[in-house]
Amino acid sequence: MENSQLIKEFNPIGEWLIFGMGYSEISLIACEEMIRSAVDGKIKKDFLYIPTIYNIKHAMEIFEKLILLIIDDKDCLGKNDWTHDISGLFIKLENKIDFEKMERHYAKKSGVYYLTEVDAMKKTIAECYDLVEKYYHLLFLVEKIGPDFLIEDKKNTAFRYPENILLIKPKYLKVLEKIKIEDIEEIKKDVAKLIKFWDIGLDIGSYLYDDGYKEKSNKKSNKK
Image (cartoon, rainbow, N blue to C red; front, side):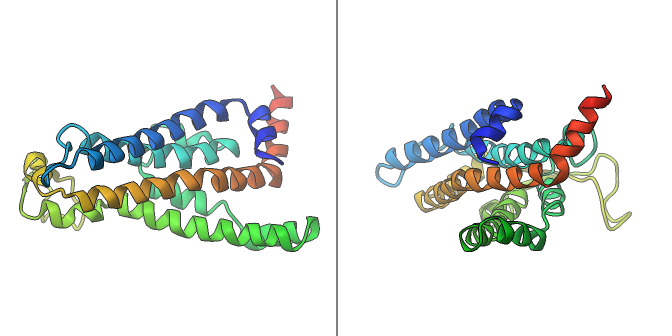
C-alpha cells in the first residue's frame, strides 16, 4: 500500500504525522537558531536548549505511537506505565515486525527492489533504536550533568530494593552553562536522522497494516 493511500484510509494518521513532523522540524529550527547565534563562544541556549530536547523526545514518542495506531494497537494511548516510555514503546513496536516474513512477502511481490527496501527498513529500525536509547537515557547529558543534580527520596525507597522511585533533579542552569556549540551540532544531526526516519517508518506501518492488521480492523468495524 502506498503511504498516500494509507493516509487516506486511516485518516488520523495525517494529524499524528503533522504533530510528529512539527515537533521534529521545530527542533531542527531551534538547533539552527542556536548555532547561528553563536557569537564569541556564546550560544542562545537558555530558552531554546531545554524545550528542544523535550521536542525531540516527544517526536520520537509520536513516531512510535503513529505506527502502533496504524495497526490498531490503541493500548499505546492508555494510562499504563509505559504510555510515555519511548524505550518501552519502541520495543513493543519492534516486536510487531517480522523481517523474515516481510522479505518473503516482498520477494514474491517484486523481487530485488523491495528486498533492498526491507534492508533499508532493518537499518532504520536499528539506527532508530540507538537514537531512542540515547534520548531515553539522556546519554549525551550524563557528562554535562556530572555532580550538578539533587536527589529527593520522598518515599524512602533508596537501598530498600534494587529499584526505587528517587526523584533526580538536574541543576539545569549549571548544565546549560556546559552546553557548547558542538553539543548543539550533535543534536541537530540527530534531528535530521529522526526526520529521515518518518518515511521509512510509514513504509513499515503500511506493511504491518497490510499484513493482517487491516483485516482485523475491518472485522472489528463489521461487528459494530
